[in-house]
Amino acid sequence: MSMTVEQAAAALAAAEADHLHEIERDSERSEGSGAQERRREKYQQSLREKVAQCKRELEEAKRQQALAEAVQGK
Image 1 (cartoon, rainbow, N blue to C red):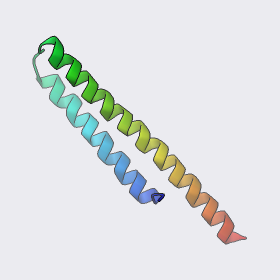
Image 2 (image 1 turned 60 degrees about the vertical axis):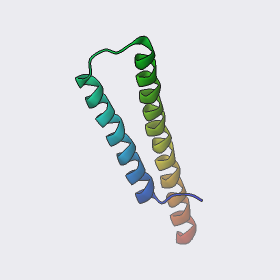
Image 3 (image 1 turned 180 degrees about the horizontal axis):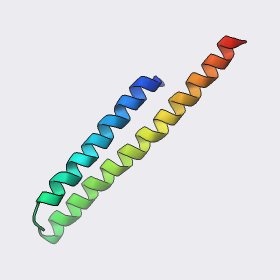
Image 4 (image 1 turned 90 degrees about the vertical axis):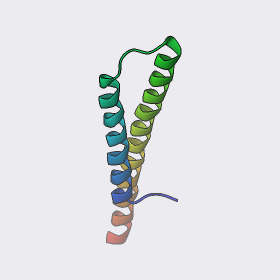
C-alpha cells in the first residue's frame, strides 16, 4: 500500500528528527571501546538509511499523487 504525501512527509520528518537526536547524543558521549564505536556507527548508518528510504518514499508518493491528479483531470 502506498503512502500519502502527508504520511510520507511525516515519516521523513520523524526519521530526520531521530537521526539528529542521535547525532546530538553522540556528540555528548565520550569515546567508547572499539566494539561500542562500531555499534554506534552501525546504528547511525541505519538511521541515515532510514532517512534516505523516507526521502524515496516521499518522492514516490508525490509522483503517485501527481499521476492521480493528472488522470482525474482528463
